[in-house]
Length: 77
Image (cartoon, rainbow, N blue to C red; front, side):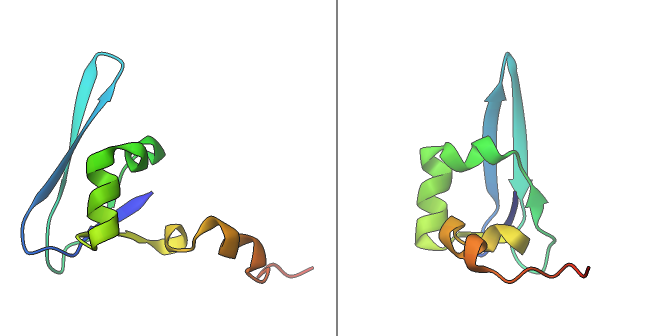
């Protein structure tokens, strides 16, 4: 999953995997999106930031799950 910072401040997401804590700094402005593990979307902090628009999913992640099924196939036979 890729996240883009739409806020005017640095957003840092801390994620614990096993015994190791990983930090994902997501810079504001015209900076590239940051790839984070899908499990990060389950963190309440991240859910709140996505809901209020401070964070935005980019790429294919922007489609809600129900729209992905309705999207036309782009492969050729």
